[in-house]
Length: 195
Image (cartoon, rainbow, N blue to C red; front, side):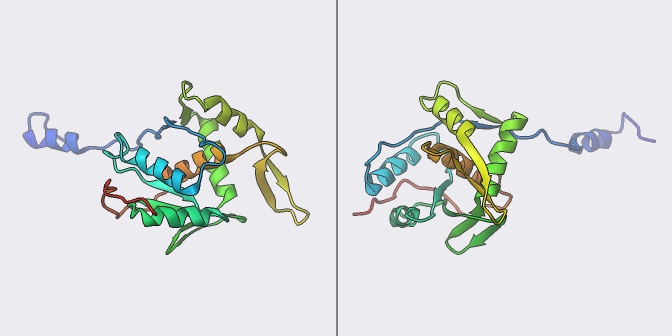
């Protein structure tokens, strides 16, 4: 039996942690579709500028960049800035996630499943005052799964619609929810732009 007057008992109670922590809530607080025709170096400069301002600079935000297809060239431009915490994600078919020397290979199924699960559970909130909030909501509604003749799922926007904001949000959620320990230190705004 414990003695409530024993000073050691208070320490034991203070060290007790709850058995279950509340589920995190993720908020999309910045959403921006860059203008069509904006050059890759200009896109990189714009993103680096965002990362060098508070609160992103203060919290040393990680950045997840689509390295699929022509995205590889954009990743190379970001690497020239010597940006810390920059992760290339190559979006693949299938169902797996693989860590590589150059970043991640992640299936579109995994990316979309994460964002859909958070949306349906109420754990993903999109700030309604964002200029592109309605656009993201529309893209999420237009996002479809179809199946190939072999029975493999194919994810994407319906014909004629965009899905770039959905994929950008999905990449951010992938980064925010991954369980791997982060060992990189600092973002630093001593980054240099290519060219």
